[in-house]
Image (cartoon, rainbow, N blue to C red; front, side, top):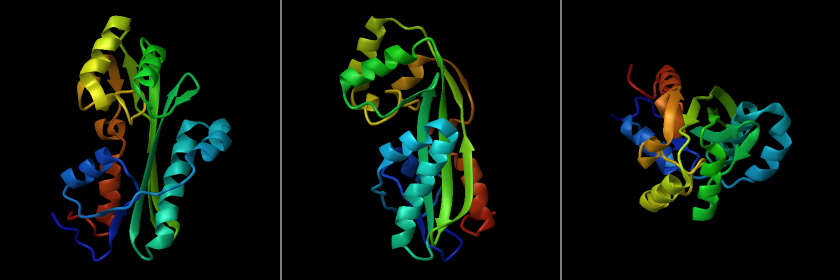
Length: 201
């Protein structure tokens, strides 16, 4: 399903999951990852909370790409995992993944997930969701077995899981939108794009 507007749509993200969601919804877009310093912004935004920080990061990424792409609609997105005030970054390796799973097991955590659309460095629209997920109280042996089976699925994502894969076995309860958990509040984004004529209504 081709875009209905003549405006160019750009995804300012390296995330294969976000790109897959947009492709699955039939959107035509360019993928142009944004190189920004996330750590400094996370530190400065910690007092404002995970939702505000996720939105600020999404806007920073979109703004960076928007500077280089005049008149294009640029989608920026970010996701932060918040467990009792502790923010987790993407698992770097199998040791870090195991540490994250031990921290999260038996507990609730939130995935503060933000998306925005910018044009000429002006934010036209934004949305933030925060699904709640509760992990099972699984054993250390299960963690080892899961990490062995999941392989690369456990790396490059916060919490060391991909819900669309083996990560589903980690959870007891989930409250919130599935697409938002995967990293992109897709339905609100599509509604905005319809209002711009980018998606058929």
